[in-house]
Image (cartoon, rainbow, N blue to C red; front, side):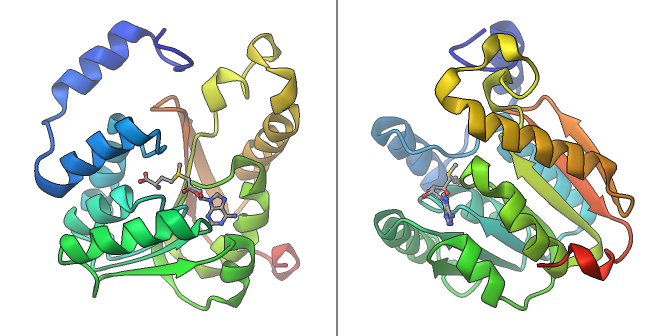
Amino acid sequence: MIDDNINHEYIIRYLRDLLPVRSGLPREMELYAAEHDVPISQPETMKLLEVLIALGKIQTVLEVGTAIGYSAICMAQAGCNHVDTIEISPEAAKIARENFERAGLSKRIHLYEGDAKQVLARMRGSYDMIFIDAAKAQYHEFFPHCMRMLKIGGLLVSDNVLYKGMTATDELLQHRKITIVRRLRRYLDMLSSLPYLQTSVLPVGDGVALSVKCAEEPHENLS
Ligand SMILES: C[S@@+](CC[C@H](N)C(=O)[O-])C[C@H]1O[C@@H](n2cnc3c(N)ncnc32)[C@H](O)[C@@H]1O
């Protein structure tokens, strides 16, 4: 396996070789992220999102966790009409805004700066897809707000849910990650058992949970 990846090295290499090399600003951002250790979506995860956007004709996206704006730009370029994205780090938010400007996407991507727990509570949007890609220990806190704003038939995408394999087995569990892993396990149990969701967890990238909201959730699940 490559580093902490959940898939074998030869599989990852093969899958990544299949992907066209990006050009322009997204490629520049990939290189910037690699050089400055910015965690952006893995290539196969980003491609999965683009496939889902094309498949579902997804027009409106909410993203939790912008970083420097890489996935927001790729999603807008994949055909989404509008992306709202939330970032807690002022430094990352500043770079993301500059990137949206450079991509000519400032009118189609709106960045909310702040802690998603508070920002989400104030938001009243309605989205075809919601992409959660922020602090893994907080996914369960983002979830009720995301459900409130996800359209029926809409798609919730939760990234990094297998967390280097630690979610799946204690054999890989690092002691200092125990709280995050316990929360991720509870989060996946919840996604998998809620009657109004159809959830599939895919071993793509660092693990991606896809959940379709099939009906309105009962009121008591909203916080
Ligand atoms: C994995 S990166 C996002 C990568 C981005 N989606 C991409 O693929 O280009 C996670 C980001 O979430 C942000 N973040 C973490 N906790 C957050 C929170 N509670 N509210 C908003 N942003 C948060 C981090 O600062 C970080 O920039």
